[in-house]
Image 1 (cartoon, rainbow, N blue to C red):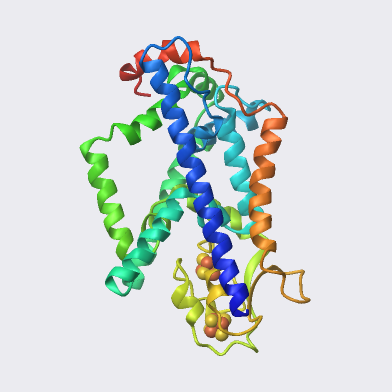
Image 2 (image 1 turned 90 degrees about the horizontal axis):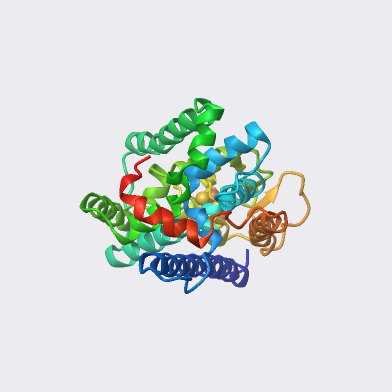
Length: 335
Ligand code: SF4
Ligand code: SF4
């Protein structure tokens, strides 16, 4: 890849990541203003509630997914949670775990943290191989727990009573309060995670994120993979050294790992022309232009959201008056 393409690839991803992060922050602020109106006793909200806030409810989305599979209906209380979840899942099925490295705000901040760590301390650190592998397993165990508790064990009646109940109705408010009224334990845990993120690449994402684990497993069927031309490769290993997931990119003809986030850092770092590329197996001609994969990633996400909106599964069935009734009950809603 020539230097201009390398730079444009890195720049495209940075722009997509940071635009999405600012959009998410905007959603958070807007939702905060909406809830503020309720909490201050205003007769009408200052701003309307942004449905995108339901992207922060992945566990509820898993419950909604099972409800949809069992009943064939999308539950109306927080439909955007399921729509966003399905759009992200589709991204992984088609384009690796690209949500993690192109859109996820936590991924963007984790990446910013390790790059800052690199600048401040001159390097990032690697854990012992056996310890690293053990820690990577934690996110799969957490995923297994959620899949067992929700997708496998939760009976249909329990699903309905949870999704029709007050706890699910105000789960978005609970999530907001998680960030705005942090407990000491939350602050300490977050501080430890942030601290370690400066030293170890993608510390939360690689070891603890069950959402990422699910997307990684789904990405195994993605036709797109990093592919290496072993004839042109000089074995310099710059790709593997730069990989945020610490994968041995130089060692095989393709990267099939569920840990690959499709960030294209390896492609951008390879000094040889057309040796590394993100492409489907059926594409054996020229390497695809650099804009193809980013366009696919963004297109799938936006199309998924648009499909939810157009089909009428985006806005919640809850009204402002429902929030006025439910928010005073928050301290009593524990499950
Ligand atoms: S293999 Fe390449 S695309 Fe995959 S995570 Fe590593 S650097 Fe990113
Ligand atoms: S950076 Fe390129 S040339 Fe170097 S090992 Fe990786 S694929 Fe081969």
